[in-house]
Amino acid sequence: MGKRMEWEETVIEPGKIERNYLKDMWRYRELLYILSWRDIKVRYKQTAIGIIWAVLRPAITLIVFTVVFGRIAGLPSDSGVPYPILVLGGLLPWQFFSNAVSESSNSLIGNERLITKVYFPRILIPASAVVTSFIDFLIAFLLLLGAIVYYGFPISVWMLLIPVFLALVFLFSLGCGLILSALNVKFRDFRYIIPFVLQLGLFLSPVGFSTAVVPESWQLAYALNPLVGVINGFRWCITPDSVFPGVEAWLAAGVSLFTFFIGFVFFRKMERSFADII
Image 1 (cartoon, rainbow, N blue to C red):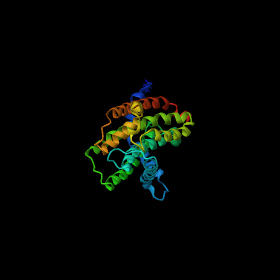
Image 2 (cartoon, one colour; image 1 turned 90 degrees about the vertical axis):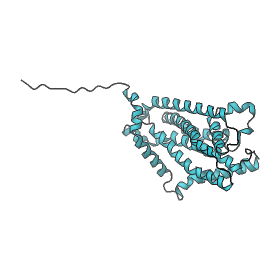
Image 3 (spheres, helix red, strand yellow; image 1 turned 135 degrees about the horizontal axis):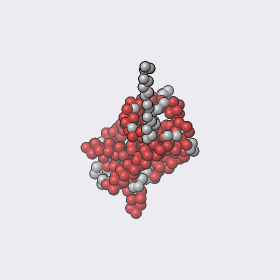
Image 4 (tube, rainbow, N blue to C red; image 1 turned 135 degrees about the vertical axis):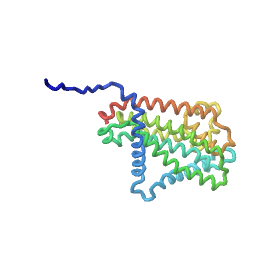
C-alpha cells in the first residue's frame, strides 16, 4: 500500500487585507517611529545649528509679521494681548499645518524604493511626516513660552486645553496630506500647486491679525476654514479673557474629522496602485 499524500490548501480571501488594515497599522507602529526619527535626522543633517531651525524659522516670521502687520499696517491686537503673542498664537498652529501638508504630500514620492520593495501600510509614510512636523511644533512652542515670560503675561490654566486644538489641526493636516500625497503619485503637477496654495492659505488664515477685523457678515463663512477655529481656540487657551470661539471651534472639529475620513478613504482606494504608478 502506498503512503497517502496529504496536500495543504491555501485559500486567498479577497478583501481580507481591508479588514486587517487597522491591525497592520498597529503591528507596524514601530515603523512609524523609525520613519519619523529618520525624517528628523535627514531634515537637519549637515546644518550648522541643527534643530534650532525649528525655533529660528518662526522667530524670523514673527519679526516680519510684527513689522509689516503690527507697525506698518497697524492691525489691532486683541485687548490687552501683546502683538507678538497674538502672532505666535496663530503662527505656530499654521506652521505645523503648513509643514505637515508640504512634507506629507511629497512623502510617497520620496520613499519610492521602500514602497516598491516591501509591504507595510503605506499610510504610515505621510503620517510620519505629520508626526515630524508635530515635533518641530513642540520645539517652536518654547518660543511662545519665552514671549509669555518676556512680556510678563500670565500663564493660564486653560493652556492645558491646547492639545485639543492640536489634535484638530493634526487630523486636518493628516487628512489633507493623505489626499495630496495620493494625488501627487499620479499627478506630479501637485508638487508645484501645493506651495502656492499654502502661501495663499497663510493670508486667508488669521495668522498675523485677529478675526475681529473680519466683517461680521463674513465671520461664519470665514470660519469654514478650520484653521480659523484652531487658531482662535489656540489663542483663547493663552488669553482666556477673550470670548471662547464656540461656533468656530465646532466647525473646525467637524471639518477636520470630515477631511481626515475622506482622506483615509481616498488614500486606501489609491493605495493599491501606488507600486505600479510611482
